Image (tube, rainbow, N blue to C red; front, top):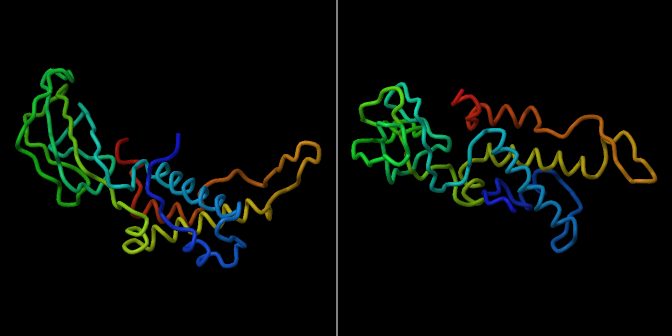
Length: 199
């Protein structure tokens, strides 16, 4: 199944960022580079434990200790429904009208009688961007982090840090496992990561 998120950069931006990558429109490497952009965009989302694409999300939790329901995919754009079940069962959810988006957009304030065992469910539009051009135009730090990671992956793809190749099988061995660069992680941790928000 293909990834349905928003790519955080474009081939043109990667080529501009990384110099001559020897990629021409229509050749096999062009398709490989496009695949790398989607793969890196997905990996960055996974690292941050959130989606970057603006979409509709539904989340439920029964462990609220304050009126704030922190969402997994900020920034909250709008809220279409908030429901509460005082029995803790999904079958007993009923809508409530009294809620508001938190000032920082990272959650929804639920004005209801909350106590242990109360289940709250919210449906909201959240995320940061709808299209790749939105990312490029409005968030150069996020686009550059993706560019940096894609260029690193491309360089790895073209073999500079391999330790050797097994001739019979063609298997390539690398000095280190592929992962996000520390500079990319620092950018994501600084502004986008939700990895520790629900621990």
